[in-house]
Length: 115
Length: 114
Image (tube, rainbow over all chains, first blue to last red; front, side):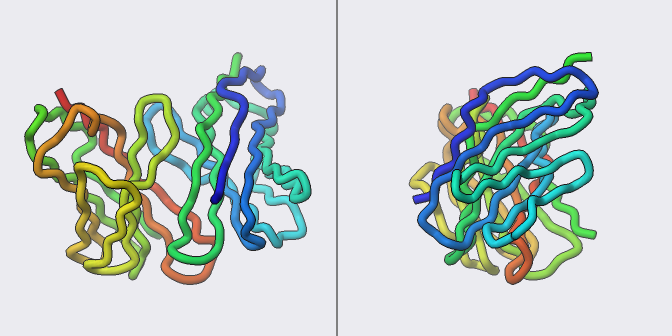
């Protein structure tokens, strides 16, 4: 069975600083994908970044990067130069191969950016 | 580009009343479609998914049902709402084949059952 763990229910970061949101996962499937989503107070889930289990390099998308440590089964999200608009809930998710590509979500981390 | 719509955005319904939430996707064909529910302050729970017209799979037994009458339309229904059906309902789509299988979400429907 797949499992995603986000141990930080809430975090604060100063504007313009970098912040790391933790995510660990558990799966016996050799092929899987890891995702991060942002959910602002409006509720919509916004896709941020994707990392495949066979990708050799860490994924980056603008100010977002994914620190993928396969041996440790961790996929931390790094947000550089935080902005006030980054205040939101952040969810880590995993998709294992096979079937209909079921995605398992973590419980989320609430990030608050302080001016 | 692809877009996904959900309506209504907000709904307040009495216990025992019926429910119909609609989700439509534009700009893609043969998508996988998903319904999720998010309780207040919680993560997402997958309710239903569909890989094609008329093909619905349920993840958890519940008071809800789903239908896919057209390729890009996904409907969540209930005959009689319960208090526990309150929550935020999100529809999502992903490509049927290839790619990263990233799911893209709609704006959601906030349902309150009184």
